[in-house]
Image (cartoon, rainbow, N blue to C red; front, top):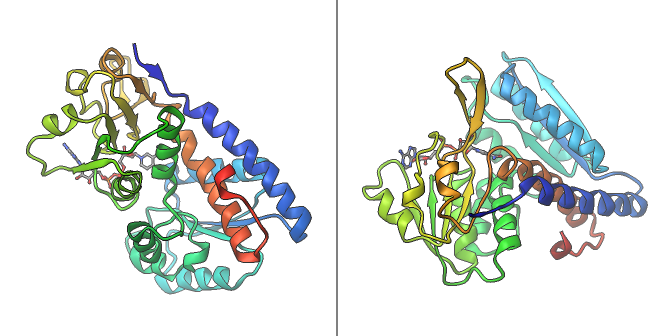
Length: 295
Ligand code: NAD
């Protein structure tokens, strides 16, 4: 059976290292690293994520401020808040929770965030830096996936990797990170003709699709490492709901060498990496030294 990759444990240990370094930053700078989270509207899932980010920030000695705006907020009003946060010297990281209400152009908002405060790594400047091999900010979920992979593999160079999904948030930056590790990378998506073949030849499978159990156990190359980013809420015959991934876990565990569970795999890493990125932003901005490799 596959080794189960414990994202919860890896996330906890990253959060502990961030907490320690954030305290050291506060001793040197006279203030905590600061993360500003902006939540527009009443989307229930977003509200849950934002509360989780608030709690995790406090535990990691990251100073968090949440700006809650009504669903009727205009683009100009949101842009004004982003500009104010850009100018606020106590704010090191800015995160605008997506999705935004339909009257707001998310691309315009992301582009307005100071790239040096873009701890989500969604700004086109940071996407370009990642593609060019320059230091910047990398989106939290794919960076968390890479950390889980590196926990398990000493060497990624030369391995066949498939990333299923090509979103700006997960799939594309994940493929860039694997390419930077010298993997041979295939990006598969909804128009891919032979998804089975792409998965079957891969030593590393990253599933970021949003289709419950799309990837079956018998697609997996024996011994492959499977990272399941998907979070799908499904209703069971008894009416209860449960979270499942994009990979048929019970089948894949029989074939894979290692696999992340859902929940408890990639999910916990995302917030831990957000805290990490905020800590890094605070050090870069103030010039206080931090060995980023120790994170
Ligand atoms: P998205 O909807 O933006 O992108 C989905 C991608 O999957 C698209 O590129 C599409 O081409 C591809 N796709 C769709 N159907 C396909 C099919 N049948 N075969 C092959 N490819 C197909 O989604 P996203 O934001 O990238 O998120 C993907 C999943 O990851 C979702 O389940 C989401 O909830 C989850 N997610 C989890 C975290 C986390 O913290 N663990 C973070 C972000 C997203």
